[in-house]
Image (tube, rainbow, N blue to C red; front, side, top):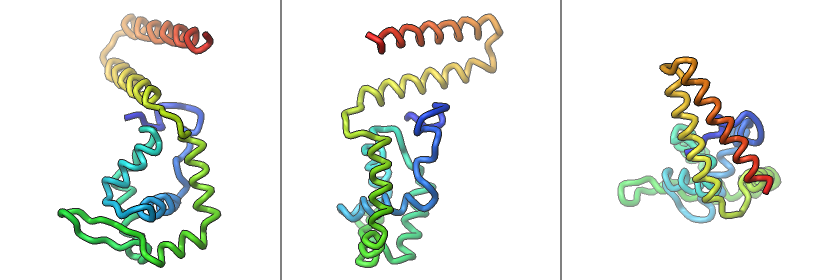
Amino acid sequence: MFHRHMFSHGPWRERWFQKGDLKYVILDLVKDKPRHGYEIIRSLQERSHGFYSPSPGSVYPTLQLLEEMEYVKSDQQDGKKVYSITEEGLKFLEKREEHAEEIKSQMEDWWPHVDMREMGETMREFGNLARLVAKQASRADSAKMEKIRKAIADAYREIEKIISE
């Protein structure tokens, strides 16, 4: 999975959301239909074409907070907690509609509505390359690292040619 820290510039360098914004995104998702935590994570992965995968450590505490605030309620279905928005949650979104729309717009700017499967697959390969190089860096001698660097530089130039065609 591609992660934002693999790039040094562009929207990937920034936090995906500001503190507290994830609750708006989650409320918007459960407004559409009731969902369990993993489904929320998967929906965000799909919306971002694989570029963003929220951790369970951010989604589940946010769901718990939303439940404590009575903006969502949970029911057990097939051994899973399924969350749905409450009237209070709908009112909260309505009162903060401008901010919620701003977050949606920001997400659309980051993750356009185009089919980005090829981009996602390319970024996965890029991630594989980065992991391979990182693994080798600690055990490769300087001659081997120079060959690796040269191969990457050659690949860069070849990709640059392809892009400019």
